[in-house]
Length: 345
Image (cartoon, rainbow, N blue to C red):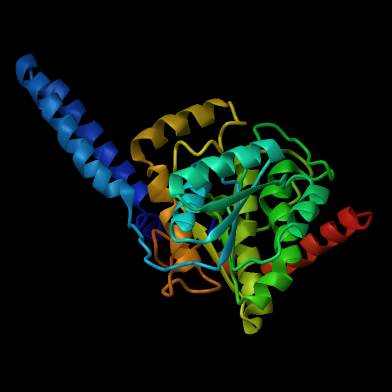
């Protein structure tokens, strides 16, 4: 892991974790060295109130509010059934964009699109999209006639090694390969509109092994698989910018922050997940706060193409995330997989 402690400590959640640890130590000190239970009880109540107020400020991060009018613009958002994808879709629809959401199962996609249209008083359309099925990705892309902004938001984290319908390891196959194929299919439309591509990664990318081949061919670790897929999201955005930036494409990657209620851990029931989930309830951002950097990269003129963003600003990812050779190797691997798996389509 090539990631500096200084970089990590710039993020809201680590600040909140340190604040939590400091308060725990202070509470232990009071319990052991202050022998007045009445004082301890009063102190505890006051301490909890003050802790919640300060911790909320530490963990929430920056906000981004846009006043742009997106009338006549089309935005595609994957994984908008819940979590930050749902909030992102609602906020873009409020700005008068036509928002197309990709969600598994057509009936479910239409139902959720109706919900989002009502919540935003906007225009949201739902189409069936299963990123673990490349044939389904192609069908989805063929329904799109225009796109100005593509937000590759959907993500999974499987507790056990599973495979996509195309025989790929599911976390990498869904989080990266599915989005890579969708982006390739929509590239002509995005070039035509000088569009933006936003890849939602995570701080977890920093835990990917520097010598990873992204395949997970031997032993499987869910956290390592998720980290490597999120590294792939950053490398993909960087390489998109390098290859197509001169044709008007603007590609961004981002860390939304730690959000304890997105559902990405729902397929992982290990004790590690339980501990992380409990910690996230205290130190993580709300879903709305987590969507801020997605909106920032999708809309702000201050967001920088080909860069990694966090907390509504350009941030420093792990050193391997800006490795040009690694990005090119991943691109070639992804193209090889796509060509092999879709030659019958």
